Length: 159
Image (tube, rainbow, N blue to C red; front, top):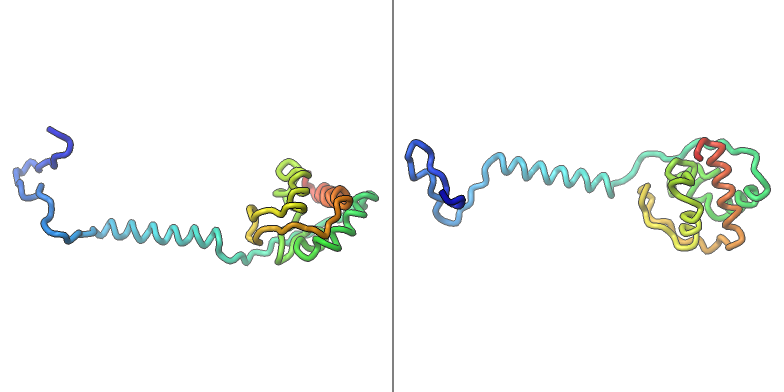
């Protein structure tokens, strides 16, 4: 039997195999339920992706005795970065904490920090929006700034 022909039930009733006449399409209850479920699921996923973030992401930070280089970086951080990334890089309502496993050297190497400072970075771990370029950080301040972030990370168990 060709695969495009409808099978007739064994009862022999040919009327059950004929397609409905006219342009009225009947959507069955199970199809409506499935469609509603899909719409609800897509709405939930969309809300999770772009919805408001109310969770506080600030962290308590242990500040170690800093090296001379990291102390210079702390001054730069407090001048340029503290408004968004919070005191001691612990985060704020405007930016993520840099003292977080997301920013460990194995995930965000020093080059990623350099790129974020010089080129900005798109939003990808948090819902704070993209980070703009930081023209107030001079080239000679970048290495000490990274040293500050890494020393504070190590003191807080992020290696």
